[in-house]
Amino acid sequence: MGLPSSLVLIGAGKMGGALLEGWLKLGLDPATTTVIDPYPSAEMKALCEKAGVRLNPPRETVGKPAALALAIKPQTLKAAAPEIAPLIGANTLVVSIMAGKTIANIKAQLPVKAVVRAMPNTPASVGRGVTAVAADPSVTAAQRAAADSLLRAIGRIEWVSDEALIDAVTAVSGSGPAYVFLLAETLAKAGEAAGLPPDLALRLARSTVEGAGELLYRAEATPPATLRENVTSPGGTTAAALAVLMGPDGLQPLMTKAVAAAKRRSEELSG
Image (cartoon, rainbow, N blue to C red; front, side, top):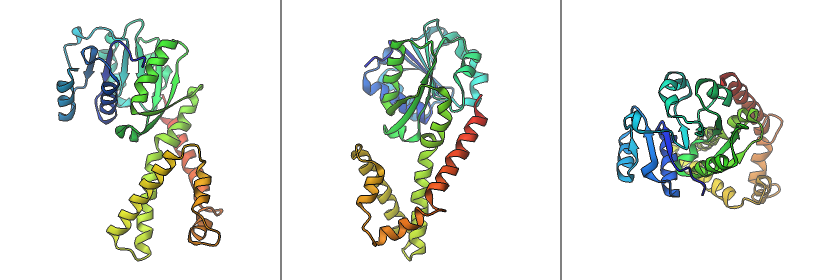
């Protein structure tokens, strides 16, 4: 699978924990894996103990790993950099999942040559995420393969040739799960307005979004537009609703504005 021979995970929150679980399932050697997190959860402590992964060992015993994954909050990088820097060797690959931190910014704060920047999304916590990845030109083919294997542990991977695209990626897939959750929320409220009991409306909305998502997943070769057309009878109820949702003030212009706003904010936060 191209997994690194040794790895240090900095930050073991929800995303870091999801990554570690995925790596161990893929066969990452726990004996050469170290987790560093000042406030690990009880679940992370139990996982590390069960798997044989070192958790917060003395820094002098860690060494310089083949790969170092940064899964900390971006605003904490500056304060954490002095403690992270000694762990980075001349050939260490840094894989960052810190939102908004560019490759240039990471290299300015850490003595690293090869950096891969990744933008996962929250479905990674259930192994169904999608992660866009950009690599610094210094990343070797072997390091790229290692990063690919590490990130595929939480779902699909999309490599982008230009790091500047990460802001648009953030606006679409990074923030996208919130848009889907909002769809379920508003569909449930619309059901209430149509006369359904609130609990029934919510169950129907949740199950509909879940089922439609699974159908979209399984019918990968079928465009979403075709799936939509398949459930739309001319002159029927779905067509009546879509006439509103696809109108001039409907979902498409709203989504375009929303993604543009998220992209602008991502650009503002980058540094």
